[in-house]
Image (tube, rainbow, N blue to C red):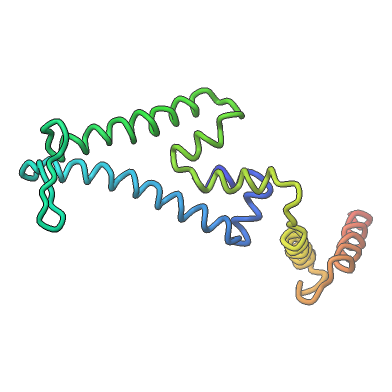
Length: 175
């Protein structure tokens, strides 16, 4: 799930600079998977218990409807709620590969990190100038260092680009 977002420009920048949205999307993806796991484990655990057919509140007994035990009710709710209304539609929407349903499919399958990067890519008003400027400065410093122009520290972007261009031009003439 991390590999896919870093294939886009914004996803790579979010990953490289560990933006809060990126980290939150990653964490929420794991929390969502734990939610599904806990649903499965609860259904399995309640099935091994003695049949629970009633509960009490302040010494008043309430019997479960239709004479069912709690394990049967949990299994029906799990089957309908998780499998039929979440997992199956999510997989079918992913299989359709339709851009209209992709965000819903990602949410139903708990791909919150992919949703976060999609939101960032789609938002034209999102200001990433600072991140992109820092990335450009970092690339310029690395290029200047590799060309042995300077040690790469304290270079402003415009000066480094001019110096790097002059160095590349000199290298071109010398060869």
